[in-house]
Amino acid sequence: MTLTTVAALQMGASPLGTQQTLADILAYESEIKASGARLVVLPEALLGGYPKGEIFGTRLGYRLPEGREAFARYLAGAINVPGPETQALAELSARTRATLVLGVIERAGSTLYCTALYFDPDQGLVAKHRKLMPTGTERLIWGMGDGSTLPVIESAAGRVGGAICWENHMPLLRTAMYAQGVQVWCAPTVDERDIWQCSMRHIAHEGRCFVISACQVQPSPRALGIDVPGWDADRPLIRGNSVIVGPLGEVLAGPLQGQAGLLAAQIDLDELVRARYDFDVVGHYARPDVFSLQVDRRAKSTVMFQD
Image (cartoon, rainbow, N blue to C red):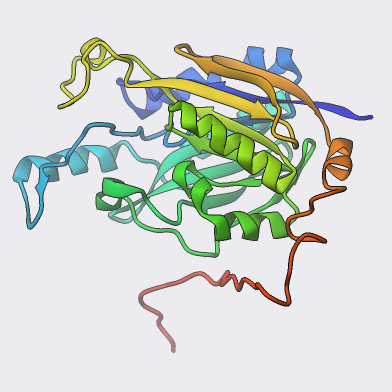
């Protein structure tokens, strides 16, 4: 038995902006070191923020000028990948000896992507995953990723991969990740609902893998000084609900609600073999004679120049 500590760092994007959020992340260095975690997962859209309740001045068929201003402010808070923020996070990974998986808003020209970044303690930024399908009105502000950013990386905690928020509900995406041998599934999210716990337990049980879901936590709109139409002004905007789940769907730690903090658990990768004894979703329980999946991993570009 080889036990490894993994963790979800539940926190929220600061209303003071990206640089303050980065400072807040770095302030957890001592706690990460003390936990001994070899893998730490942080929430979706942590650097850059998740603009819950914002409508960006849009109605069907037209956009208002104030919406364009809101988008310009949002883009200004996004980060370049790589950039100074990713360098600071790579250094944090090196100092803590923990692989980090972190949700950011990535700026690429004038397009934004909801992205998960992977940092290795020795190699720095080693991979990224752009959310394939922004959900609902997220499609207004985020571009769509392609199959070129579906990484599974080696770490001290095992083979690490995953999906962002509602991508976790995409069966074919999950199958593509399972086929790459993912052992620890990372799910950065802002979904605070109790039904999310069911999804995380299902993925752990389906993939026979460990699952770490890290959710943002945000106070009420009243505390933030904003107005979110249709939302109870005293109800937390995002309450957290980060959780760590074992390969048979058992909750190992959490859910953590209503506060920031580091949620940790010990895992043993040897459990995966025993868990997959009766169900290996892309192995003996698959039926390739009936079902098959083709994954296009080529990067897509609108314009290609040839000399």
